[in-house]
Length: 359
Image (tube, rainbow, N blue to C red):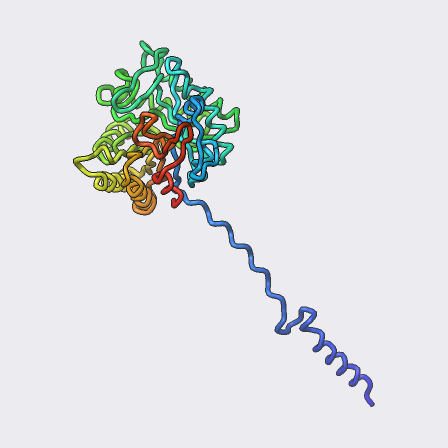
């Protein structure tokens, strides 16, 4: 017997038996592991609310609850309704109005929003109380100041609030420099229709102040009546572009129920069209930073759904989000466009707020 031939054949036989189970070239070779599927990125579209009244409500004994009666903080309640961001207004020195929305109050709310895991938007009114298209009052401490002094006032106030937030490790995602400045602010010095250069200079001071504290925070210029394209075109073309005003986003307000002659649906559709026109013409994205509908109207939930659906899916991605103003309120609070009901001191969301869970 040729032992060498026998031994070689034996080795080949044994090797053939062992290869498949030892990871050789057989059919049972282990498949390389499949890499894990990366998480789906969060949509750029955000939903949220301005709930600046809520600390005042709590001080007056009101308690926020979900629909099954569980007590919750107002920010966490908004979070549970699918919201991503909370907007907080800031007044300069509201001492005659119980100091709501002053620095201390804003810090309290901002920390609660952060604790709820949500983003913060800061809304500077640059006034001691409400500022809107019908009133833009200079703070008492700033009266009689020159344009140069007002630039310093705005910068100092803006940085003071933002640095206080920074010390508490709160970084706003967005900051508004002015509230509904359809005709400018700090009247008459910076009324846009009379003194556009002053208005532009003060906006620029606010922008620089924001970026000096939070370089990555997006700066919003906020104009009301989202259905009125001409107001936006006038400000963007004849003021912001002409005077080289820096900003990141156009903020809008929309209250469709006030437009009875036009009709709510037509008002919404004009707003949607304007978002696309503003981006296509000026390359600026928009955000609906205020929207409200009649709290006791059965049609309001359907209209809110229409606004959210069209804002998210019919603006070619150029509406960055929608924020309700102020959903924690109800008709008995004295504001008829909230999204809650109250039973005694217990406040619960209604059907309008429920729509936000879908977006």
